[in-house]
Length: 383
Image (tube, rainbow, N blue to C red; front, side, top):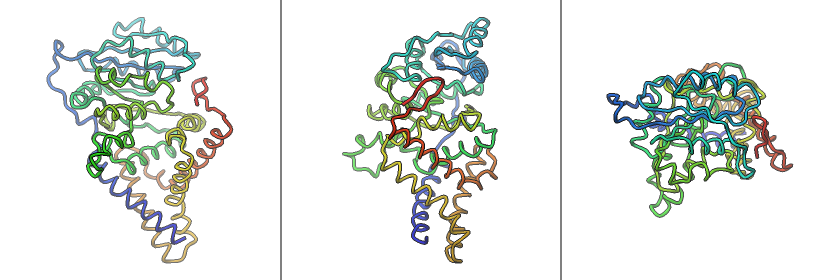
């Protein structure tokens, strides 16, 4: 067991350095400023919202987008052949609000996945100098768009990781781990610029490996979006947000990540079944369907987050002390994240169970992969 603890310690030391960097370098969109509003010179922003079967969230999303204090914007919502009350809600809103463009989605071609197809249709109707795509489960604070515009003046594209609202037990247990992984494994600065420690000959080639994005909020200036081929370039990608980021970096363009604390909010899922099915469709895909890498990370997560707890309970006194130190470091990281995003710190004590939950999810993803089964989402097969 001591060997496993040393492996865990090596991993945790790495996360300490990444976490410290991200704590200071992963900037918040709320820190962006915007000068005096001028109706005559402010560039037009197109807020694009793909929506399929979003009856529980679409009204809050759309109304928050329409309440922006930025002086020059349009809101486009594409109803992607919804089968619930989404269409009726959008019809009601578009009947009383002039600045809302309610678009009826065209049938999805076989070679496209649903979300890229919806976003592509939105981009064809949008007329703004800036295109900002947000998911229907997102809602914006009134100054979000003007701050995003300011950020886009310094970058070819931006992506915002919203402040995740978690209400049920399963949301509190599962969702924060996504952000914990982001903050401890990938320096945000490397998404924006290539690591200087890489040889110059490899920097451009390796740049896509450091790409990341959150499709819940991603914005482009029009030229960048056109140059990379828009959503046409990712029409068959389940994790289209990450692939867009990779494409941006392949074109030697700049994408910058922000957190959405105080500006962009999201509640991804509302029940355990939604969480499981929602993550099932993209968890394995996020590893590029690389089975050895997926298995390696699954083993590492078990060693890092579960083995120290087992050592604390069943190990000898020296192992228990060592394990206690490792667990304390992890909890400090988690509690800092909880403080930053307003999550319940007591749930962090259950992180080993969170990891076991993800291990079960991983097993299901591998079962899907080897049996050819496809996950479904919003009434469509995905895979």
